[in-house]
Length: 316
Ligand SMILES: [Cu+2]
Image (cartoon, rainbow, N blue to C red; front, side):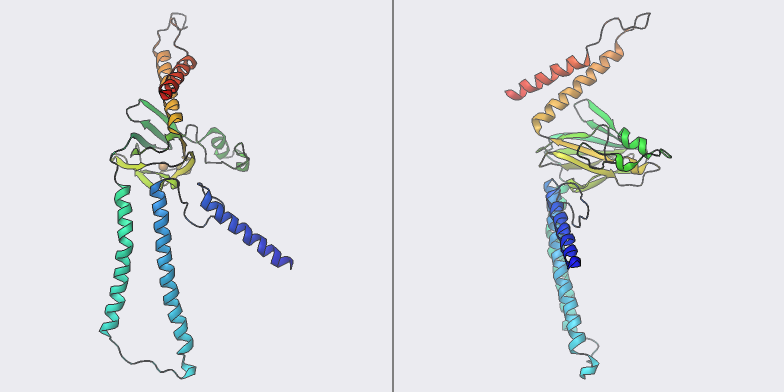
């Protein structure tokens, strides 16, 4: 009885995990299916996968069903005698034509999705992604904003050889383990915006992959590859470099923070102001005693000004 109850409990836990897998954007323990993702592309791939899986399952049931039925009903002990013919043109035409039709049937929706995935026209903004051993550089093309995104310090300290620190203790505010998952500067993107990506590499081949977006793109030195995404809901989406790119390949995670459009505008303005303030500070002439003569615009003030300007622009 106890065993039955424990089986039932673990069964329920598995079902709960599977349902959670459908509802949650990021991978969960015991997730068996693809993530449905947060972009139309990802959703289409998910639906295609389910469709093809269903077709495969029906074919599997039919083929194995016919086989098992034949084995049982036409066995030697029942007096079955095998047919002696070696060729049957009609049968061969049927079992060649039917699979071809099934394959063509699957190709049509798959090709439609592929065409859509490669169509970067009418993009509203462009982000350049540059893979570097072992971090990412993101540039908001035309905005003058760019930064490096690398493994966060808490994971970096733990992963250092002989650190003696416990990876299980790298947790976020909710107690979830985020070892090797967080970065210092996530890529911030607006939702409901067609974003074009230009992906390239600085040194060796890397690959930029966020499963919830539904695609991955190799980042190759000397080649700029295009891709695009339109994120449907705000959230934190994680990914990894998926090309074995050297010693620290496993230590260059990707974090995308998708925010509402208005919030993104404010964030971008803050970045510009902070960059401008940093530039002003760095070019300010120094006096003989090493103290800057003209105080640079304090970064905080510049950020506040830009934020209120952006907020005003949004209010109109
Ligand atoms: Cu890499």
